[in-house]
Image 1: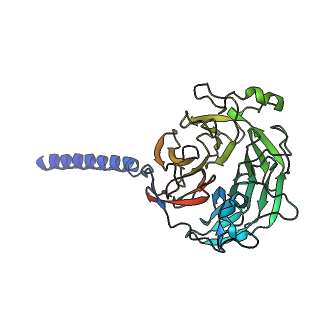
Image 2: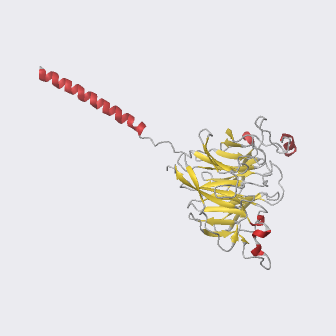
Image 3: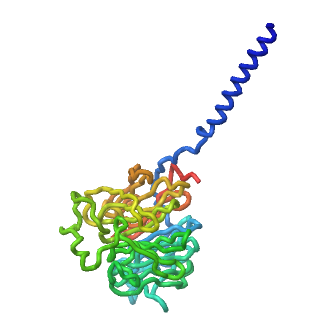
Length: 390
């Protein structure tokens, strides 16, 4: 009898132990889930890029992009150089330094110039004031301009061969004309559909979409996904005042110039910088409005939402928003729009900004910022902790 009871007790204990083990196995997946993405931290790298070759000097850097090889591309404005910044180009040369650099420059990850090109040529219009650059999933290079006569975007091969022009030179024709752009600020190519989304722009008040292979018009929309007002009604929608913006007013119903950026996340959401309204608006690809976030609402002048770029982890957990009025960039959690880090201030030293204008991030989490006004440079911010989890 004793032996039987002992065996039964032992069996019950083994059964209980096996049950506990099964429960631990069943729930262990909860503890083995990947941890949440650590909030990244950055430090400016004053050694990047390397000195430019050929006695070149940069003008206002009005666009930055990163390609699939982590090469960094900029578009800059040679015509923005002051006379005393390009004395070597005088005839005869007035000093040893410097010469205007070409408009489009490609850097390798170490900051060496790989190639440079750009300028007027046969078969296309060249912008009078270069603005924005994108390298798409097929390696094509896109950019536009924000002069009042820059009513187009251009598509080139990576070595500078012209491929296509969407729109044409000349003043804008309004938010409902599909043959002409209005000083476009930014371009993003959707790899899923090969459609080109254009932030249009400094003159118009819309996002407009074209087939990236043929240039065929697809669709366009304004703030909150609404149809932009017809041209004769635009003035009545614009508020008065020197700044054109009242932080105490209710949300403004149209994009205010400039519509300065457009980016598409991996989940298909489209992010648009409504710069002077100090807000980021989020849409679906068909233009359906999803949400908006406002940053530093009391900012007047040129506004607080100039450009943005997604953090390169799997979920794109954060984005960086650059602000050329307050001269800083913000690290924003994408789930709820909360600012979790701020970098920079006005100034000319490394890590400071004078007109921070654009931002791009490489696959390792290094941040690249461009500057217009008198900044006229690109800076790299190394990620020192919280590098993206792949």
